[in-house]
Image 1 (cartoon, helix red, strand yellow):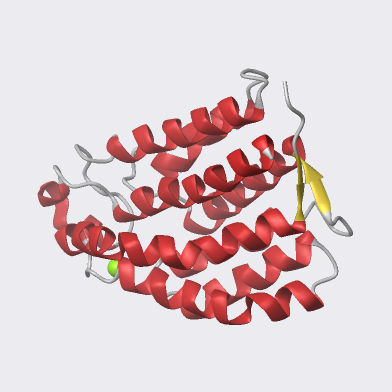
Image 2: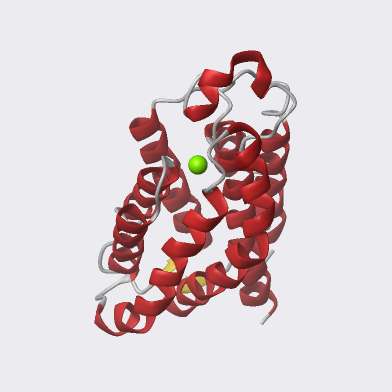
Length: 217
Ligand SMILES: [Mg+2]
């Protein structure tokens, strides 16, 4: 079993990957959001991560630790991403950094803790529960995986985490929305996947890709 230590460079690389990733997925997310929302989820994320990319070198130079990197990224998303996903993803990244003050590298377990903190912040902010047809339907099954002892291997565990989130996103398809704009559609939201749940697992896959590089380096 590999014990992975994730340094600042890992996280900076992940954040650098986010813009090409959202650019690539923008149309897909846009499509999902136009079915049950206002069709701006893809472009909102693109705008947010474009700004992240613009500021990333400065953030990397000036931030004292990984905690600050996450806080700065979260603040950018909070300010730049429109719709409900801005405050939610903003809170996610801001709170993900809260327990790693002073650290320039974290263990894989600490990283899992960061994600759990971030997801708790989303729940606190959005007040959504499982079955409300939101990104929480993707995130909470993921948290269950992160909190389990097994698999011990970081790559296996994170892969299972992303898989659980992906399945969680799929689980939103038959649901009536109880939060967000899609709520107004009532039964008409049935048959459509929640765009926030979709972008949530996809974003975690960006972390996974770089994690594999870090593990097999
Ligand atoms: Mg929208």
